[in-house]
Image (tube, rainbow, N blue to C red; front, side):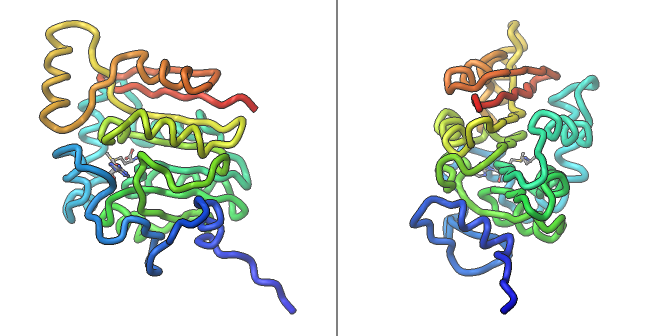
Length: 255
Ligand SMILES: C[S@@+](CC[C@H](N)C(=O)[O-])C[C@H]1O[C@@H](n2cnc3c(N)ncnc32)[C@H](O)[C@@H]1O
């Protein structure tokens, strides 16, 4: 009798916390059912992500253009961000990589190539329209998508080798709970890489950053704040990079 290998979706379901109900079969595992979004709404920026229009223009126009504004001319390009995330997380064959708030899956697809068919690259997002676009973009065999709340990840403890969270932590209702959740799902030796906001240290730029953050429903973190949060959760080898009003912070748990 030939043995059948579990599908990518089945391998994803095996990693979820016991008792998690995957919902009716669709192109992605949907744990949010009828809810329009994950968790409480945090404002305009998050709402735009679940419209029909933004996901269509997101990857090629919206993210590169807004990214350039917030990172400044010296900041990395989109391709540069993907390369940097891969460098910081160094996914290897067979690894499980979780791309939290994956949007249209630009990073998830890159991780899918790096972990190979024996690994898993899971893109998690709260927006149906973002995930529809991600699914339609395809990707390697290891790529799979999940609709869930980034603040309370549905994975069992110590199941993931690397967590990527780019351009999203500042939109979450409870970023500290999200960081706790990232820490809990990572295996010993697991890696995290985060791109988020970084408020200027000097006035009046700091006031302007804060006002833009409040208006758009996005938290403006201080420089050093995310690194301190990772260190407080036991991460080591924490590195920080700054560009414009963004910070990229990475670290790993002791092995
Ligand atoms: C600006 S996009 C970032 C996408 C991708 N990581 C990137 O760097 O291009 C932010 C994403 O976060 C998602 N998001 C916001 N709050 C969320 C939450 N609580 N749970 C899951 N996804 C969330 C949005 O739906 C959106 O797709």
